Image 1 (cartoon, rainbow, N blue to C red):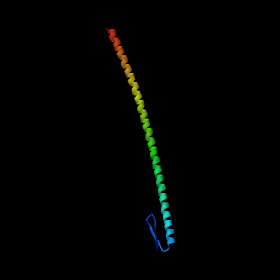
Image 2 (cartoon, rainbow, N blue to C red):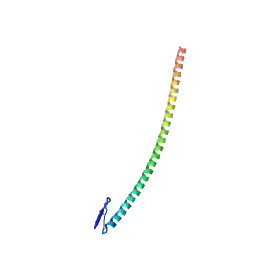
Image 3 (tube, rainbow, N blue to C red):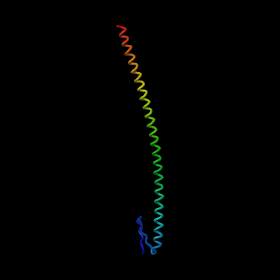
Image 4 (cartoon, one colour):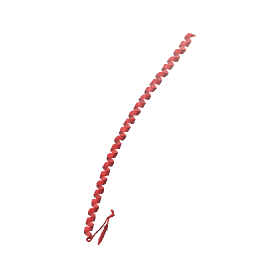
Length: 104
């Protein structure tokens, strides 16, 4: 009686060792085929997940870029307002000085 052991831990016994080997080969091929199908499905799921993540990251990057641009515009506006305020203060100081000189 012949016994054949394969890497998938299945022991097959048959009176005719040729039939046992042929059967074991078919079982081995079937298990391999199932593993290939499962691996292919996993690769497709992983690819879909990664593509979804890439789309989300791109959306987040676009949103962050938009917020940064808005902040830059606000800073520019603030700088213009500050420059305008500084100019007004200088004008008021010079007019006060002129007024004080004229009044004396």
